[in-house]
Image (cartoon, rainbow, N blue to C red; front, side, top):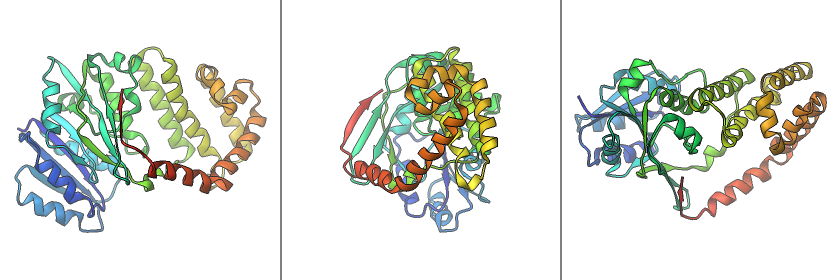
Length: 344
C-alpha cells in the first residue's frame, strides 16, 4: 500500500488540470497514489486525467455525478488506501519535494496524527505571498490556544492519518458549502493526540479574482456552520481566547447577514425573533466582541428593533450602492499585491 493517498476533486478544470497532474507526477516522493474524482465535469477534464492515468500506474481517475467538492473528496476518501491522506485542488500545483517534506515531518515524532503546513498564494500579477507555519510538535489544544492555524482550515498543506479518519468516520459535511474543509480539520484535530507544525511551504495556491465572490447561504445553513465552528473550538480548546472569539464572530455575522438577503425573503418579525434568540444563546460571545462591532453592540444593549433597522440600511449600502466600489477597491489591491513572506 502507498504511504500517501492524495485526493484531487475535478470539476470543469480542463484549463488547469494538466498543470496540476504534471506537478504531482514530478514529486520526488514516489510512494503515493493520486486519486482524481471527476465530479460530473461537462468539459474534457476526465479525458485529460484518463490520458495521464494510462501513462502512470500511481494515478487513478473516477467519475461521478455532480455533487459538489465535499462529495468528491468523500468519494476519494472511500477509495484511498494510503497511510496518510493529502488533498489538492485541480487548479493548484505542488513543488517537487512537497509530499517528501510533509511525510518526513510526520516521522519527526512518534504518534503524529496530523501535519499542518503553510502555502504560497500566487496572484494574477505573478506576485507570491508565502505563509510559513512554525511551531513543531504540539497538542491539539496548543494549536488553538497558542497559534492561529485554525484560520487556515483549507484541506491542502496537510497530512491526515487515514487510521484516525476511518476510526471516527470523519467525512466532509455535504450539507455545508462554505468552510466545510475547516470543520473537517477541526474534527480531525479533536481526534488527534499529536500535531506537527511544519515549516514546509511548497503548495502553490493560485488566487483568481473571481474567488472574491463570496457565497452566502440560507440562514439555517449559515447557523449550522456557526454552531459547528463554536462547538469544535470549545471541545478542542476548552476555553476561548480573544482571537478565537473574534474568529467565531465571523461566522455569527455570516448567519446574521443571510437573514437580510432579498432572495430569502425573511420577514421583519422573524428576524427580530431570531436576533433575540441569537442574543440569549450567545451572550458570552456578543459581550466579548461587542466593542468590535456596532451591530453586536446594539444586540448587547438589547436594542433589537433598532439593530434590525440599522442593519437593513447598512446591508443596502454595503451590498447595494457601494458594492461596485468595494469590489473595485479589493481587486485593485490584489492587482498591486507585492511578494512577501508571512511567518505564523
